Image 1 (cartoon, rainbow, N blue to C red):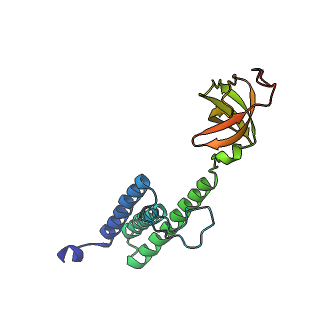
Image 2 (image 1 turned 90 degrees about the vertical axis):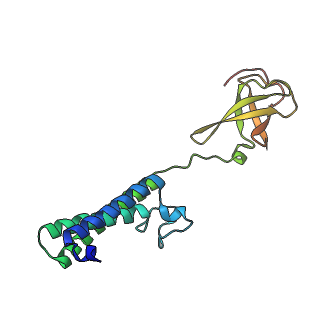
Image 3 (image 1 turned 180 degrees about the vertical axis):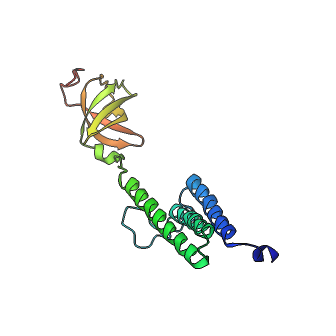
Length: 189
């Protein structure tokens, strides 16, 4: 109990800032700690954006800034209440900046995943010849994205590289392709 009675205001704010900094380092390495334990402390955030004001990284920055700015106020002999208000203001400003920046970065992420079912019925080009009963590779374009997949011939015939094919079905990790009769010549577009 003697430890707490001998604490001055500056030391208290430095300890708070240090605890916040350690929490920040842990959050930077592990990500959102609340989410890691199956919970989310975000209240009513935007759908699809999971970086809110109650994200563990934002809270860690808030605690660190609160301790740092509170220590500055205590060093300038403002007293406990004014130093706490200075710390609160600094914590809100820096926590808000981190939250806005995090939301901006997450909002800029694009999904590059294309479902295999999007390939069915699409025209593709054989890039690695498909030998009878074996696998090869096709390349198709969906929007601005080029998709490469392992391919098998529907009827077991050989399909040369450069041949245009149609994706007929999905079979596990590969696609089943077929050619239009007369177009298995190996000509490219």
